[in-house]
Length: 238
Image 1: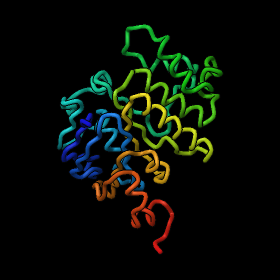
Image 2: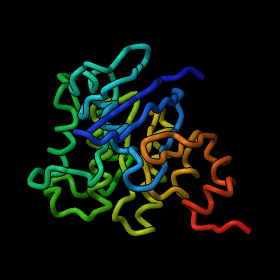
Image 3: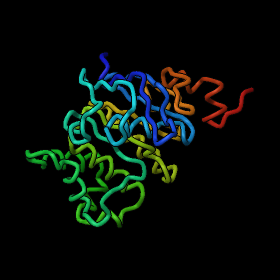
């Protein structure tokens, strides 16, 4: 399977602080790939640099054989990448339907088929189509944030902490949707502190510590790694 995304020697700094230190990784087309690690490891900075919200100081970001560094965020979205940001960031004063349409702001074609697809994925959103997004629960807002991102028809969707602040039962539902989106052909790059759920969902995983990738493997391999169990899964070594 060919790589849809290839990141090489990526460095990202904020002022005098280097958040990402020369990392390299691949995302194969059709896979779920996850970055796990503690707060401050550089995971979110990596996603933000890929989509152009933060400018990388060095390195290469190749998406479908095209270099993304130097492109605007709008240009990157047009090429087929979207980001579901940490904290959801829905437009609270707009309705559910208006939020979804905002995700397709660069499209000029008919949106009805895609809106119907989103409502099939998230029946709860269809029920609340005319409610303002600010009245939704946290889990419903996360569904809306994912649905809004899908409205641009991405080839790669990146999700930053989709389970943050959600009840365990809701988290399970979010990960069920992640798997379903992937089954329908969308490649996913996931940043997630719930390492157990992330590794279960992932085809491939990378561990980040203080801006560097320190370990990689399949999701199943890292789930069985003693160091990962102790550090991230709450399972002490025997």
